[in-house]
Length: 621
Image 1 (cartoon, rainbow, N blue to C red):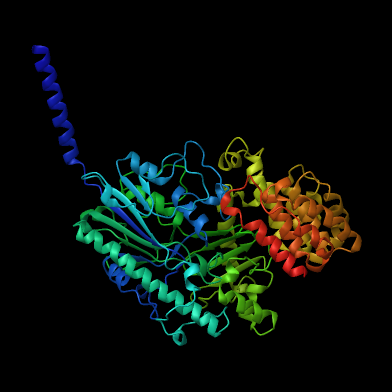
Image 2: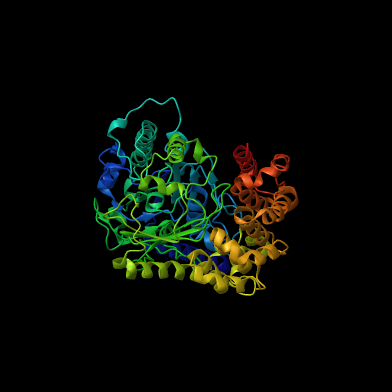
């Protein structure tokens, strides 16, 4: 009996102690994220007088606006990958649209850290990551997910994602207009036509519809008596769905609205610059969202996360820059990196031989894209409107204060050289720090990391010698003629990515590069790497003589089959064939007979090979 009494005393005192400790613990906030798709900061509270957004304007009057927030990627899947991981997808091998890679086994997606801490986590309802989910991520992720389904007194984290402003919605016809198209502001890079005005006006109509949905989310929290207990974030998932915004890492494609409300009850979690109803110019981006969320929930962000918490217990110092990236967009390859500081935007084009407006089937469904391209072909555009349909300079620099539409490139301005060098260094430093995997052909990201993960592989310099690969890529993309000797030497390197950039460097220089490096390119048609062979064949096929073209076409045709070579080599080869234009006319029939699918590819990529084949044949007929 004495033993039982003693045990009862210990249990009772233990429970009392636990309850007493819990009573002393500060309350944990609920967190609500309201997100919308394909819209930049085109809201009344961001001083856009054309916008009609009463719900978010009222919300901003209680919360705080972030004037410089970038989505890091200007398109949905890579942007969401940035958020869910708290890492740059360029370091995960996940930058390319709807690719699929894995996190290292010891990394988790941010809801998993929240759930371990007792949070009920819901997502309503889009995921769309370029990463495999490492186990159970959400308590519920569906069209029915809701914070109301949690246990009593359990803190929640909930996302409500609104798709009404998506690119596909701004071009849906018929549409009952609300905003007057005659009053829309047409940016300097777009032609002023009825089609362009209607698309822009309809975009604003959709934002108004989105605003009403966001208002309902806020009203629901208030009606439940949870407004004082809930931290709320509202943000868009990247810039507008209009062409030259979505898919492009300019400020127009990366800047999103971000409004954060932290109630008085949790004022100790507010950042130093928090002013209710105010705004901050602190640069933040999507890579910072996961660390910030964990921080406001009292969880120390794991060391592998590359973002910086801008609120909560683990707030870090203000960062100087935000960063953007562009890889493969649907069926078209490119490599662009950008840096912003709130006023200036720096852009590094690693594939300047590709035009901005490469033909992407989905993008060309928007009326603005089609009429814009038709007017360029007809010679009806001014200089600013023509840029999108031309090849790119190696570097770009824009002053958003004097040039908000980013059409006046200051990269060659003598008075801006110090700034250019500083922002260039910031871009290069991030690439080195994060071990940017974009310097590898997409297929090699996967082949080099077989049995591991791209992130782990990239940390092994024997598997990914970034310094020398990046050095040759910089030389290749510089377009400088004096770099040719270094590129010639790189053809003998043991690493295939070095040889790839050497071949790309000659391709980028057009007739001059092919003329000088013809023998090296011809030899590279037998390289063990399919991507070196493709780059060499494209150069010879576009800019070589008849013998060069005859040698290049069989190489490209052989690599274009997705069943024989996989989707990445197939897409690369088909892109090259398409750029050959009339020089590929003799293989049109064989292209038409190619298989349309790689049975091992992610199902989300199933349209890419058919799109490339269709476009190539249309150009040849």
